[in-house]
Image (cartoon, rainbow, N blue to C red; front, top):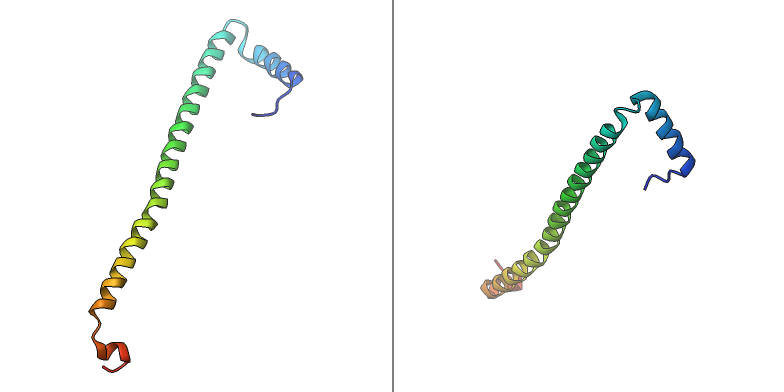
Length: 88
């Protein structure tokens, strides 16, 4: 995901250990894990909503095209013969 190697993880862990301290590190790790899970859930919900709207938008033109075709057919049948020939 982030393309972090083993050496980078060790450096991050050592810095976190120095900054946070060994007593609070497990609590901080749990809290960070909960935040990451909440962010993943939010992204998944947003992705699902966007996909649903996208599919809905793709379905709309088909119904519009069908109704437009039906209107054109109706309009062609309602023209007067003079209007079709260009005489008004």
